Amino acid sequence: MKRDEVSSSSFYDVDASTYDSRWRNRAGATDSRDLTAIVVELLGAERTAIGLELGSGTGRFSPLLARLVDELHLVDISAEMLSTAERKLANEAGEVRVSGHQGSAYEIPLADATVDVVLTVNMLSHIDEPARVFAETARVLRSGGSFIFTTTNLRSVYAPAGGIANRRGKAFGQEVASAWHKPTDIEESLLRNDLHVTDRVGHFYVPRSLQRFGIDRLLTLAPRSAFHRRFASIAPMHAYRCVRT
Image (spheres, one colour):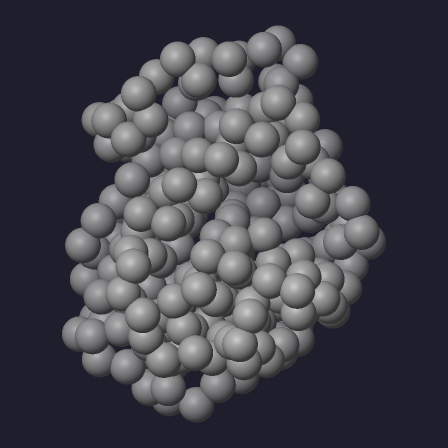
């Protein structure tokens, strides 16, 4: 495994049992609500056959994809995160066939052109080489398939912190790999892999280190959809929808 994978695997194997609790305070709930709404919007409502979630974590967003597919594959580098997600989906996925795979986003354990939609949320912030992930995503996607993902924005209002995290190679206050990416690099890599952007939305969130100052209250005052789109260029997170050509 690469450095970023080793870091993420060891951190999230320990973090799996308490991960979901961080979204229960006011700031965490606001973040989760807004990001969930963005993911729902980008996924759309069209049903399809086979879905894949890369970096499924504890299955926080998995039910959003499960409602649209007949078969769902989960891939995560952390065995404990994956196990938590599988237990969650056993209760929430209904008749959807769910298969879990402990594995790498750099080497997705699925055959070529077998997936209709790929979702990955909050994973690329731990990935040093997103271009490799895009290449693998394009490999497993069928022509016309969709790719919905989020990534950190190194040109955002949090750019100074992102630059420090990149130099340190890990997140603030957490022993886990952290990577912030330039939107131009992300979008050029997508195009090189025949993944064409059809939508981009900004997501504003408050880091846990700043939650005690109540900054998250300001976000609740903004009209959600208009705010996230109008100021997308400076948002600390970007959410994309792409189509495989």
